[in-house]
Length: 213
Image (cartoon, rainbow, N blue to C red; front, side, top):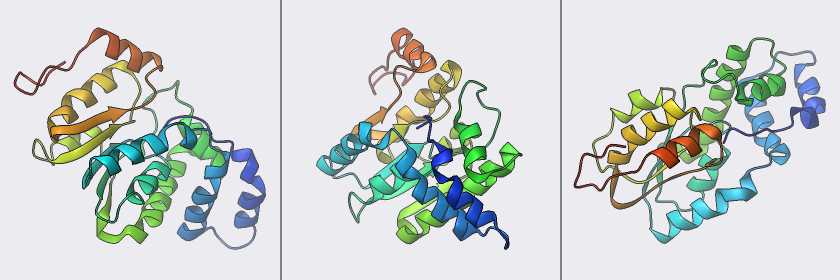
């Protein structure tokens, strides 16, 4: 989800972490986990995806756009039988209108946005380690990662990556075939300009056709 968290709430924690000794990866992981309290989106849809995954007894789940990893943990906590693949390049410069990168830089107190994204990747990976073999975080572009999976591999795919129109359409084209028949293909932020425009001017054809938009 590419909406704002308020890093200012955690400046006290951040200043404490930066005082004296160098900040460790575990410090970053703790800071990321704590910052969920300042985020405005988990209540909006996390429960819906978790409910649907539980109802369909999903075992293989892919999420395109992992960000802070909160949704990943929510999905993995649904069932001990879910195997999760999270895909996120943790790369700056993908969309100047998206405030996510600046939020991450503020959270870590970093002047270098890419260094902040590098730290976030390491922190999220550390936070997902408790799920052992059930969670895999791929630092990769969406389109490159899609090539790693056979068609029909996933029970559920959740799209929440780059929100520009070109990127959204590319994600839909790349990941739609990766969902098994009668699986669930979903995402969020429909009202973002790129997503809405793409959705209103495109349609998914049936699996028996070309799987194109």
